[in-house]
Image 1 (tube, rainbow, N blue to C red):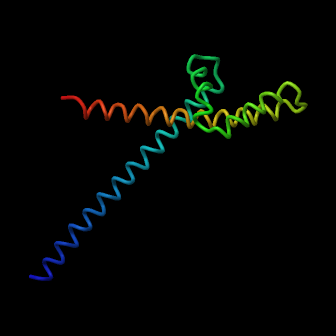
Image 2: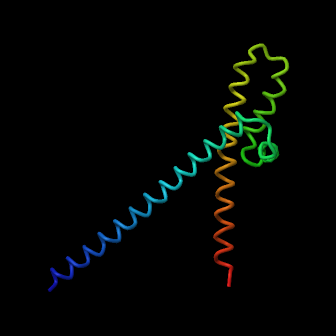
Image 3: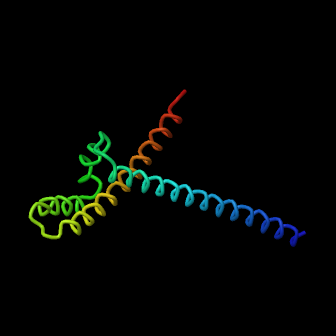
Length: 123
């Protein structure tokens, strides 16, 4: 009887652990999907033409990462006098891409939280 109880307990514990592992894997995969979408959207934003979304992104740069934003603005000032323009453009593009990735990931999180709130607060 005691052995059966231990066996049943082990079975339940293993099922619970497998479920937790599965939930963690799903969460990790979802985060990777969101990150990949953010990277794709960031590339479109940085490499595309000037849009309203780009304007919103530029307005939120300091909120996303103040140090990167300050660095970007300093580089932008140097762009006019810097001799190695291509290298400077590459650095600025890299910083903008990093900020855009963070922007889109944060935007997705805010939308998800809002949707959760709306779902929970409906009567």
